[in-house]
Image 1 (cartoon, rainbow, N blue to C red):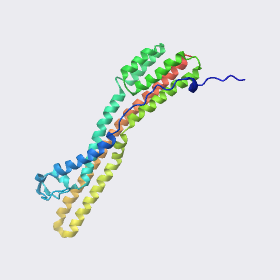
Image 2: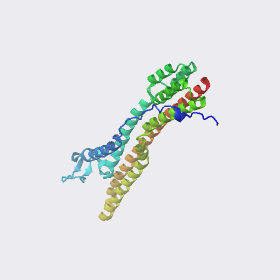
Image 3: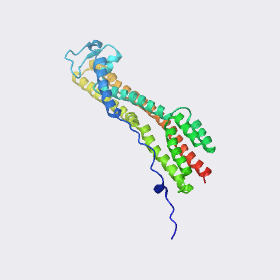
Image 4: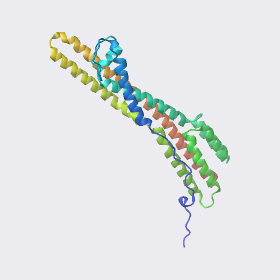
Length: 286
């Protein structure tokens, strides 16, 4: 009867990688808070009665003030779409700060390339413990993945029931499982920035169209060349929606590209870490 070789899945212990506990409450709390804050800014700051020559004494949810005294208060007349755009701008700021802090922590300490070179040096000298200490110093996502792989690497050195290929597969599987836990943390909440990039301009155009509809409706009701001035004012007010929306979308796009570039560098470091571990083990422990 042919001899049956032990498999990696049968003899190797379960992964030592532990799932990260993280709360994503900011993903649903922040948009609500930002929209409320956007309305408050529009209603009570831009719509402050002192900034208009003809304030609406009745007040309410959407006071119809007239005669803004400056450009800041003139934005108020852009309509009810303005607080939504302000809320989206606040969302870009909030999620940019949140992603910056998260990705800065994931990058860890020092250069990722220098960290990988140090680990390669220690592994070439068969000093796994020194390589693990480098991971503790790095304290980033690349270091976390490398540390998980090095622990399995160390176990496979003394494992006698598996051949070299099976040991390499076990190390590679450990790295893949650690990577699967690290990458979602980096990508989380970027969807808000990518969505605002495309939706912000569309919402701004909606506000502009609504403003122009109101302007032309007023022109039709008043008639005559005397209403041309009111039409020009109405169009300029409507264009505030476009300016605010384009600015918000541009900022969201810039921040999204910055963060994705940082994530790509971390992902490349993780891939290089896995390659380093498997190649090192395959060459040193044949």
